[in-house]
Each structure stands twice: as structure tokens, then as C-alpha cells.
Amino acid sequence: MAKKKEKPLLIVDGYNIIGAWPDLRSLKDAERMDEARDLLISKLADYQSYSGVKVIVVFDAYTVPGLGRKQKHFAIEIYYTKEKETADEKIEKLVHEYWEKKRQIYVATSDFTSQWVIFGQGALRKSARELLNDVESVSQEIQQQVKKTQAPSFSTRIELKEEIAKIFEKWRRE
Image (cartoon, rainbow, N blue to C red; front, side, top):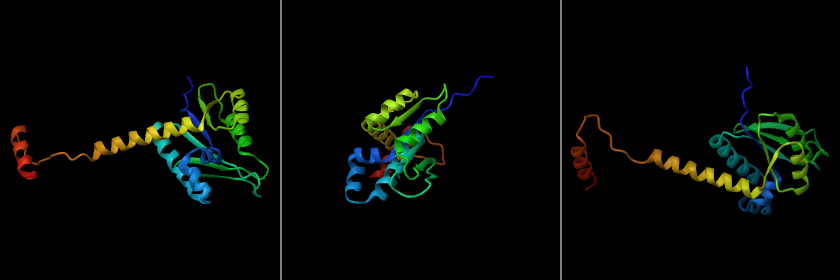
């Protein structure tokens, strides 16, 4: 039996993206990094839900003492690297761990050096700008879907001919 094709995987260099997206960068510059991280994760959760792409976010804790940690939020895996481990190193490990012939892996980073290592492992790069465009496009599609579902529709418990229903609707609006 043939192996099921895995859904695409997107691994995101969290702080690289925060530094590249204007709304997140402004939060970071205002020393509101927690809010920037939360907003990034929220946007990526919407993207993951709508697109079907599995998303993993890696935050660099290179200078922070500790063993690193993994948590799940909005069905997104979030990694905080351990002391003396860069986000790039963790991303490389994740690409190696998740690499399968039938799985497409994208890494969202604008770090040029990291991109070359990632290419060598078979993953594709997605720049911060490309990811922002994708996330904004998905956000617009979600908003359009919400508008469609919230559009008022006339309903009645009594079956009426369409022309009678239109007359009643006109009276109701007057």
C-alpha cells in the first residue's frame, strides 16, 4: 500500500519574521515582544487552519539560560531553543526530522545563510515578504467567507411563492 502524502509543512523563524513584518516590528520596537509573538502565532494559526499547511514556529533563545521547550498553541507547534542553540540550528534539525520524499517543507526566513543550508536539505525558502503576502491573502479570503455566511437571508416557515416573499420583504424594509 502506498504511503499517504503528508500535508505541506511550514517552519517559521519567529523573530526573523517579527523583525520583517511592519506591524510586528512596531510592537517589537515598542518593547512589546510578547504581543508581537502572540500576534504572529495568531496570524499563523488562521493561515494553518485555512490553508491546511502544518505550521511550526521557532523562537531563538540563544542567550537565555535553559533547556529549551516545546509547546502547542492554536494547534501550532512552538519551539523555544535551548541555551547556545540558534533558531537556524533548530530549524535545520526540524527540516532533517520532518523530511520525507512525499512532503514539501518550506522555511520562512529572510536569513540568507540559513537559506543555503535549508536548500541543501531539500526544503524550499519562503521569504518574510512572501509569507506576509500569503497570510494577508488568506486573511482576506477568511473575511470574505465570514461576510458570505453573515449575509442576511430571508427565511420563512410558511412556503411562499418568490414574488409574494419579495413583496413581504419590501413591506418589511419600508
